[in-house]
Image (tube, rainbow, N blue to C red; front, side):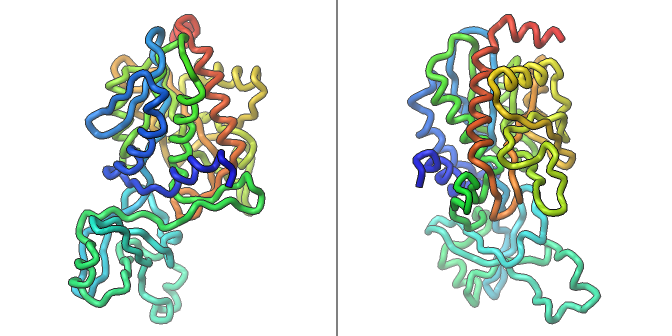
Length: 353
């Protein structure tokens, strides 16, 4: 495996649903503690790594959590009921393997539903309701499940190994939303070295998938003037899709809007101009059915000029999402080029528009 992929593999495979990001936090802290001048946490668990001691406050953030479940109930026959955390499309949940993280270790389970053979013919084309699904541990009683360590509150995540696909820049894994954004922030902190232009706050937020909660608390700690959320975006370059500005390998997406943010127009124009000057490929996309951490980051204190940057991703919120390595690397390059130019004069000009 290429050395550039080692961190991505670790981040993709580690488990961390909203409210239970401890394993992810530990991994990220180990990666950045030697490069940050200050390392702090908000009271929800978001990580804030600071580089630079003077100038305007610039915040870039990637969220640590992934979509998943938690256990709510074990039936007398040993089947597990669950509560989803984050948005799931029921059809991608069927016939999948899951990891239940218990105090005794990881227990594997498979999604169970009523078999199609006993579903009336006129109902077989109807999407399966998540409420009717359960997890099958391969046991026959509640007592057997409990002996394995399964109990209400256990975190459940997709069981999926990081894979390099046919073209070795296409990377398959779970949790790219948003471990790939977290990876970008890690690499920006590592590659920045010193920073005498501004105060950069590289932030890793919690509980984005259930309401941008860590973004709200961490941005109140930082009180940024400039705030950029680095998240996944849509890659629609598939059969039946419209690939315009939403394709793998074509660069980071500088979002026109999403469900939580109308971007600051002067900041957006500034970032586009930097991309052009540095000859970094980019796309101008939008998200209709979702939002990013910038939805709360731009509202802290007096407000911040904010923008969402998306890394194109196929099949989000599933076991099997695909990203392109070049988009990841070009997002890092763009963020570094932007940060290095955001001195007080530039920030004042952006905020005055």
